[in-house]
Every structure is written in structure tokens, then in C-alpha cells.
Image (cartoon, rainbow, N blue to C red):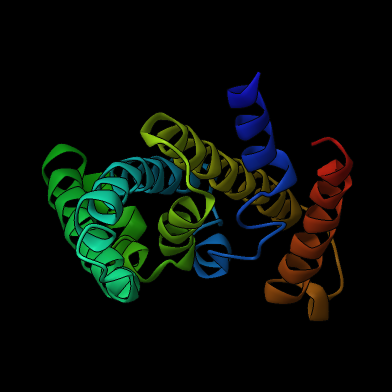
Length: 190
């Protein structure tokens, strides 16, 4: 039951984008097409899962052991940067079209505060390794869900007639706000 609470809480109640407001840049920047959003979601999920494992090990085997917890943010940023570089190299070889579609937003996963936030939250919550991975993957699924939902809505909105002043960014921001309010409705569940 504990893992179920972690999963539901991370995906819906404490959605990293729509409730905690982390990762807004890729949320707004990559969410023009559902296909691109799915690719970004998969890349972020992979990075978050690996980050959870590496951050947990570094936190407990190095930082706490040598009493250098104050280095946590720097160490986690370095780990995330290395993992994103690995994902970028893999995507460039395995899926050049997705690599091109993600463009500049792929290297920006390094500065995605959602990924860094996950690493820091795992350390703060004192999860064990399995709970850390479940939490990180669940947050990544929540990130992906928000990204794909928003992309689907944006694709649909492009087909609708609306005043010229509302097209593009204004309607995207209004839609993001409404989507965030809808996810806030889940806050009573867990």
C-alpha cells in the first residue's frame, strides 16, 4: 500500500509540474506536439530514474558518510549533467528524428529543476533505494502526463477559432493554469 500512495501522490497530488511548478520551461517549450512531448517525457523519465539511483547511492555512501551533505546540490547537478549527456548521445544514435525534434530542450534537461528537485526531495524524504526509484519514476510519469495532456490540448486549440490576441502564448498560459487547477483538485486524495 505504501508504494501505491507514493505513486498516486507523485503522479497526481504532487505533480512536479502542475502542483510543485518545477520543470515549467520544457513544459511550455516542448509541448507543441504530442509526439515530441512523449519523447521528452521518456527522456526525462530515464534521466530521473537513473538520477534517483545515483543520487541515493552518492547521498548515503559519500555525502553522509564523509559529512559533506552541503555539497549535495553541486554533486547532483554534476550527476544530472552527465546523465543528460548520455541520453543525448543515445538519442542521437538511436532516434535522430526525436533528437532533432527535441532540439535545444534535450540538453536543457540538465537545467530542468524538476530533475534536480527529484534528487533533493529523495534525499530529504529519507526513502530507501526502491522507494526512491518508485518516487522518481512516478514523478517523471506525472511530468510526462502533464506534458502530453498539455500538448494534446495545444494541438486542439490550434484548430479552433479564437481572437488573434489569444493565439499562441496567451492561450497556452491560460490553459496551463486551468490544467494546474484541475490537478490541485487531487490534493485531497492522499
